Every structure is written in C-alpha cells, then in structure tokens.
Length: 230
Image (cartoon, rainbow, N blue to C red; front, side, top):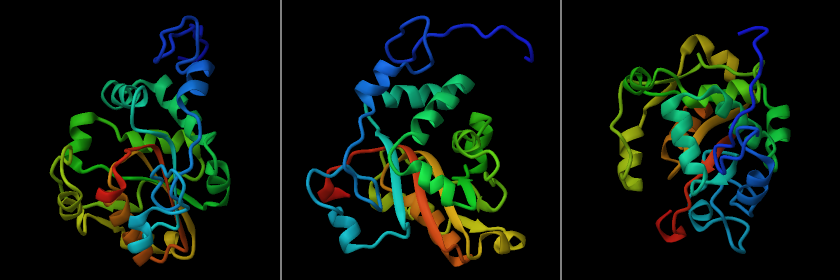
C-alpha cells in the first residue's frame, strides 16, 4: 500500500532478522557462479559444452541459469511458487539479474517472454511464476501475450526425458497476429526451473518458426542431471 511503513524481514534461507528476503551472506555462500554448458546451463567440470548439446544441437542460442536446483534454492522456489510471496519474487529476480551473462542478454533482447503455463496449472496456482520473474527482470520488454500454450499437459514431476518430450510436443505456438512481433528479434525466454529442457526447447522451436533471430533461455535454477542421462 502506498505510504505504508516498510518493515524489515527475515532471510528466507538463514532466517536472520532484520534482513533482505535473501541476505548477502547467503547469496555469497549458495549462489557462486559455476562453469555451465552455454546452450543448456548444465554444470560442467571441464568441458566447454555438454555431450548432449554437442550431439544434439539445442534450439536455444544460449542458456543461462543463476543457480542449481538444490538446497537452499529448491525450498525458496517452492515457497515462491505456492505461497506467491512478492518480496521473494523480487529477490529471486535480483539474483537472476546478477548472474553472469544475464544483464547483456536482457539488454540485447527486444522481447522478454515468460514460459506460459497450461491453463489448468494457472487456475491451480493463480499466477504464472515465470511472468512474475520476467516483470521484475525487464518490465518494459516483458510480453506475455505472444507465446501461448495449447491445452493442458500432464504433470511432469518424476517423468523421464523421453516422457517430458512427449508431454510437450507441439505444446507451444505464437499467436498469428503477433508473428511480426517476433520475426527478426532477439528473445529472452524466462522460466523458474529447467529440468531436462524439454518445455523450453519446444517453446524455442515455436519462436524459431515465427522467425525469432536469437533465443536465450534464462532460468533461475537448473536441475543437475548426470550428463549420461541428459
């Protein structure tokens, strides 16, 4: 509410008070940059690109993740998704913005698009967490009306990579009246978590068909799979 006293808060990780929703010591401890595959953001130990992206080129031109989907970020993301905490949304977007390569990608983009939720998921949750992040990252470039999702898809928790690919095949499309918005432009595609990349890859293919010139995937957290199963 305008004019309302801003009260100090607890850090969502260490519960220090008074604090920002994510305190600086926790960010420094748990959000250290790591070497990642440039097109799927999987953490790498020594190579410049992961085996899967080398063998099967990604439909993304680049992919950036702020953190790995592990403690303490998995708990923070669950709280953000299911409790719709606006202060946490701002803090997580701030974390994303300060990850390596994010600022240049946002600056170069014409459009910042949230991954759209299936209608049933949107009804369950009441908001699209990817849209909330996008609005904090680039409010004047965020476009939530061009990339659309067809129908409803099955829950993907616990699904294999092959099952996830089948669930989202042809799930995304660009509204015909907005194709000119995409054609020839640089797009940043935002999501909270990337597991296998199946959904983001399918969305990127739809944007590519519509003529996007360059697509960067930007995610808060990347699940760390064993590379052999990636």
